[in-house]
Length: 143
Image (cartoon, rainbow, N blue to C red; front, side):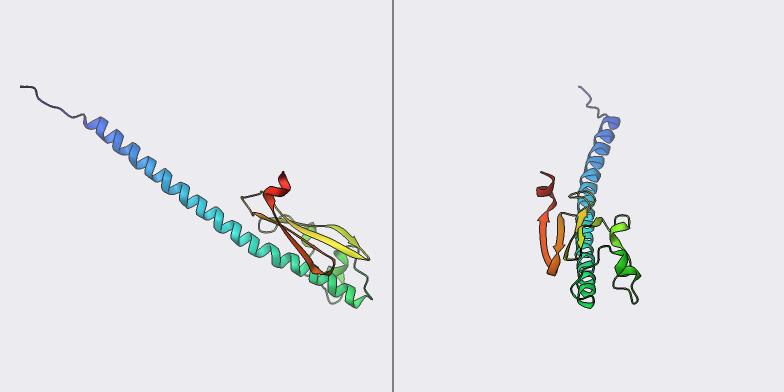
């Protein structure tokens, strides 16, 4: 009679590979969920900051006979200050870079752009004179 033998080393190696594959799968889903929650948090911070900048610009214009400031420094240096800090001169804030492409006496255009599309955020925000808000998918801007 033939004696059937099992290779315990081979079986334990296969078991180990299955465990590693399952851990990798769980880790993949966990990382994806973390990225998704970070994107949601970053986007929920970016829009209020951009609206704060726009409100500060509008309040300044209201107090200065309709003339908007030509720099955000005028908002932070005023007494009392219209804005707590110049977000456009700061490093990225919670996944977004803030900037004003237009700051003139007759109007403004400011934006919040993701540091890395689909990693720190999925939306790009632009707000202009009168508080007109435009929201775009960051993938469309890259094309």
